[in-house]
Length: 407
Image: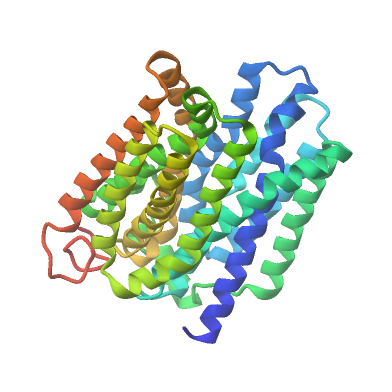
């Protein structure tokens, strides 16, 4: 890998890690902060979904703007919005101000899609998956360290974690200004602004979703997001209801998932894609994840659960990276930002509805129902992969069309 590419990927990795570290610092504290303003369970639930709803609306717009004007300017705007949001949270005097801080962060927080678009710009087909894996590794590392650090900082009051998160975002802003060059050349930006594929309209996004290959890969991403988010947000509740595990054991098991996710996306994915074809790896990892989620539903004890979590975490990491990698190889280069923004919007949608669905399933059907539903969703993803990835083998594109064609 060229040294210049390594440098850019290292900067993006550091940027994403710091961004997620700041976010995960305050995420577990939000219910406690809201209680200071006498917020009830319903209001706390709305607060937790406000950010995801805002991202769902804004991410495709931010991504499309980055196709027309470059990744770097939109990253600077997005980071500035994050700083403002964290400062509002730190100094919030009312519940309304707390809500506004999360909405502002969601509306301007398209950092993940922009980071993935940047990596797509600077990598080629052989290095794409490895580069995108670094984003997932940074996510996992941030979520391992952030909640613990936030809990320790909260001992000194809830203002401090918000200020630290804002400070981390400010460091990101300075780093992007000083060290991160624009990934699109002036010629590319000029071409992309006049391209019909970067038309700034809802109709253009709908056309993108209707393309057989792109639409299918977006569906796969949605099924994965729904199933794995169901697993993540309901893991603690399932462990408590089904196995009666204590907090310490559950925390250790979740840490195991986080560490394996970091290793998979940061190290293993690069080696796997150098040895095997991406579309074949994707369908194998999807099937393994479906079987693992089903097995999770009926784990008899903590030891068996720990063993099941190993293929669960590894297959989830592979599926996440490769579904995104194949998506970027199936679209015109000038619509990468908008399409990745649309993908992030679908992930945000999963974050909005899965807590509600999971809770209802556990209450009215039973704890195993969560894993069974996740397995069904991943089985659906595997069927979709078989249909779109192996229909016309032999051509250059991942879906059997010429790469980057309007299939």
